[in-house]
Image (cartoon, rainbow, N blue to C red; front, side, top):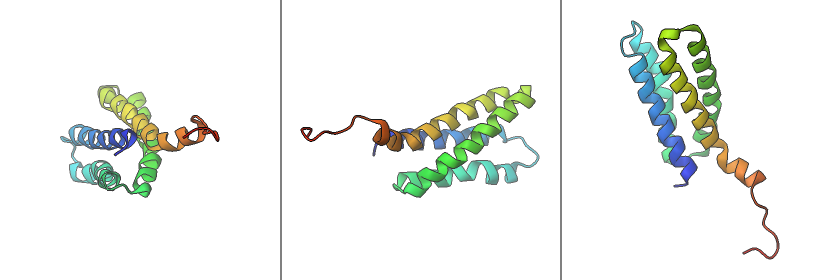
Length: 115
């Protein structure tokens, strides 16, 4: 498995653990677990199986998680540590999901003499 996929898988797992800890004492715990914890776990399964669509959707949801974390950090100072951790993990998810494509596009170009 490529390093970017390993980072993506670990980041998705860490995000699901973060959400489990964050919403553990919530009155709407079941809804929060379904809405926040389940998607990263489902994407994790797809990433581990090598599904390109799972990688794509992890990047798309990473944008949502980034926005959510910024909003929570700004509006709820008591939950700022959780929110900023979510922001960092979302950035890692976005970067790990896009790294192969970015490196293929902007990486070292092969010339006719390269093997």
